[in-house]
Image (cartoon, rainbow, N blue to C red):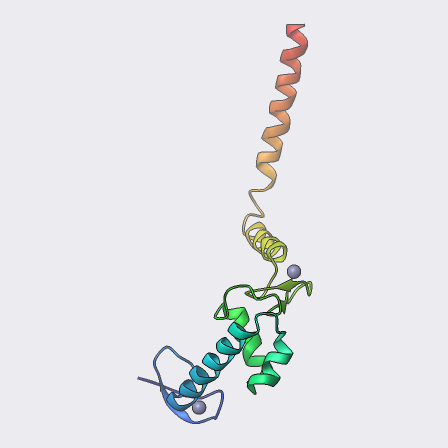
Length: 136
Ligand SMILES: [Zn+2]
Ligand SMILES: [Zn+2]
């Protein structure tokens, strides 16, 4: 059993996969239901208005959007990409930034192998060039 401090109230609780104590978890569930109900009735509401209307912490709603708990792509339920600030409906980065991040990550892993395929490509092209000249 792992003991943790609840990030909401600071109490120590037994961690079972959810990083909230049972009491705060219950509160969290209640707030989530409230938010979902409000959204259902007001699908065009923005995060700020939603937080005001439901008295739920705005940061919490942002977190739920990033975690994908608020699904359905409500037009007002957008968060910004942590890299370029573009509006997104889920996660931390927009698709182009996550692509770029993935590419730079895999690129740094293959530093030694990136030059070789390029060399073989040019020599093949040269071979092909010589052949086509000969064919003429
Ligand atoms: Zn708690
Ligand atoms: Zn981005």
